[in-house]
Image 1 (tube, one colour):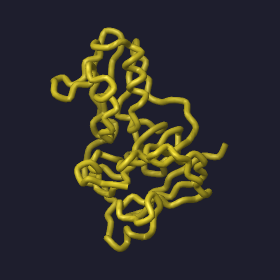
Image 2: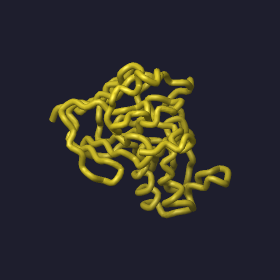
Image 3: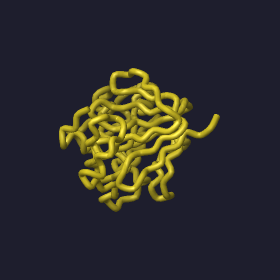
Image 4: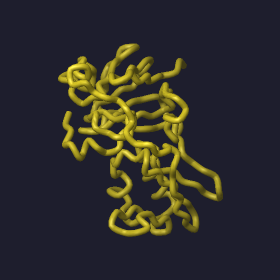
Length: 206
């Protein structure tokens, strides 16, 4: 199977080649061509596709923060340790909504690996679209999954990419998980090309 690739055009769209599995926020299958241009400025009138609006608004695709993408903190538990990468998090909130006993926004430390069963924690971590969460058991680190290449559009949010879609960027911009990551669609992220949750701050809508 040929690689599915994403190329980031300077101050322009995402160019996706070879994609077969493309879903909108309703879970409906879209029919991508062999090469598609996806909007990342947030202003296209034909979302998710680019219509050239980036040029009109003088969109900048520059990354505005200078933090390494691989920076993470490890919360150690008796049976499992949870790895948390705040830099790459898209704030989808799957963790706090599905397992609030472990992922506790109002407490410090905000993650307690000993407050739920092992399998429950693993299942929730697998739902993290950005790659911000991973885990280790007996010092073996688990981050990626075995999935077909796909892009799922999050409602009023990012492009959730999965299945080892190749992101054509320089090494320092490679996501911690090359198997799954979330790319900004609203144009407001300071961590471009990745989503940082800014779509919520600007009330971005499809």
